Image (cartoon, rainbow, N blue to C red; front, side):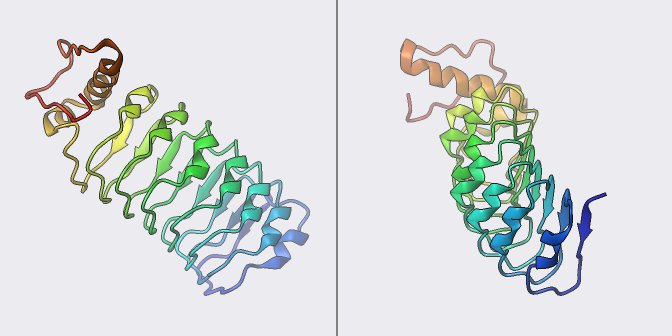
Length: 219
């Protein structure tokens, strides 16, 4: 089947032996004590799924960018603060889980991954959502619960396929709570109208569902 599992074995080093296998489509190395991933991972060009959850990783190798067929990458429960720029080569990614790491912002390497459907980054140290989020035009799920986010960028309005936006346990003050209570469509409408105001010099909230009104310094 091409599936390799080494789970909960207290492994401290990357199993180099896997590169000798004829085909590896799924590599699961979760719940170990890995601190680094060998550059040899670049040879796993048939790999579709990579699971490195709950290890001790502080970084990933640039060589991972050679695994261009990866569609799913699970990195939850490590000590990561960034991703190598080379991961921008992973154009087939549709799920990335960065939860329970040390990210202060969503890694820019993902902005080229336009096929991404699900981005999970709960329980990090993220303070803001970068405007490039709009380049993830196919995104359906964005989970950012338990971070330090205080406002949403206007570009959220461009994520027309997004149907699951999780922001629990943040201190978001913009858009105001009344907009959040009305649902994601109202959030998109509200941000979209404010964004358009920079061009039209006027803003129409007549069909935006809200129970109170709040402006932003952008105006």
